[in-house]
Length: 79
Image (cartoon, rainbow, N blue to C red; front, side):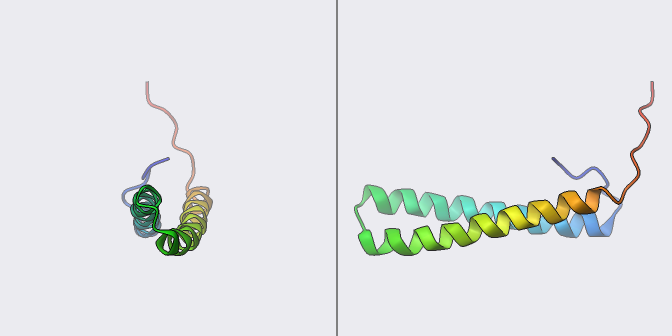
């Protein structure tokens, strides 16, 4: 997966949305791992909830990006 049509504004917007969602998930996952190592029970519970929301946001953004990609015709390979 990647930005195959850099000339498409909607592709750029959706890719940025997906990228932001991945970044947020990775950040929260790191915080969750640190809270687990520190045995911070309250923080762990909140971070698990936030990470679950981040996963849903990431997956949704990825699906929207992939769905939009199907609106572009496939370019023939050049030899």
